[in-house]
Image (cartoon, rainbow, N blue to C red; front, top):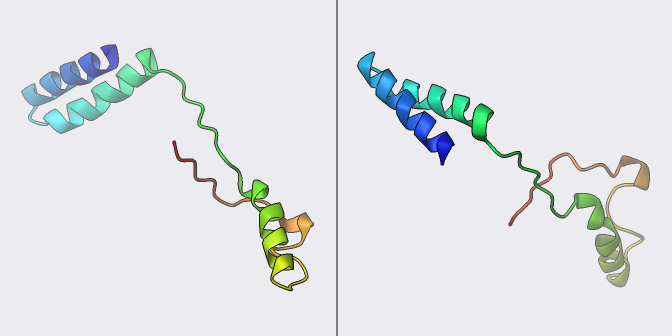
Length: 81
């Protein structure tokens, strides 16, 4: 809540100088640095899917799915929730 108040104050100060949106941006940054909570986002990893993909590929008559184990590193992790 304090973060929002600092952002609103920044917008008010920015409005005096003709740019309330820039004031909001700066105020919200300062508010997040002072009062923001640290977020730790954790969710499923791509590496967790490889065994399932292997099992599905083997069941379909393949010889194993996905790249070799040495190259199985996720490039992008998307967490939902």
